[in-house]
Image (tube, rainbow, N blue to C red; front, side, top):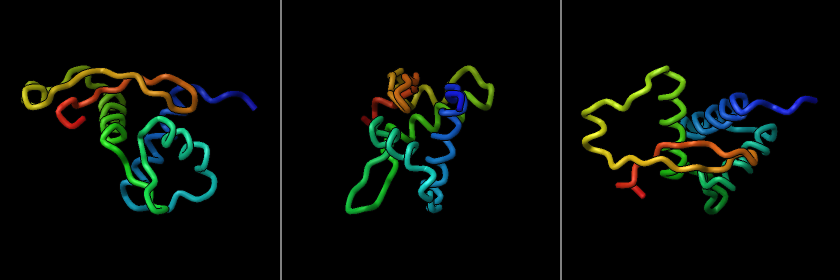
Length: 104
């Protein structure tokens, strides 16, 4: 089986985080993605419950922004956020993310 492209892995992580955010069950098929998200700090597990971290929310916002085709952060948003770039690892692949330092 061919290795998944970065785009496919990124899409799988985004779908997983959105489903988790919506409270949907992930099933056993998502265990690889869940493990990658835990290692990358996108989610945490506490008392058996999974929740998205600030880093995970920032990653998802960055992913959605990138998928929308927009290339700039709006002036209003930028003036209220202390934004910086960070690299996180998901599925043993580095991903460039936009992080709100004010929430870190």
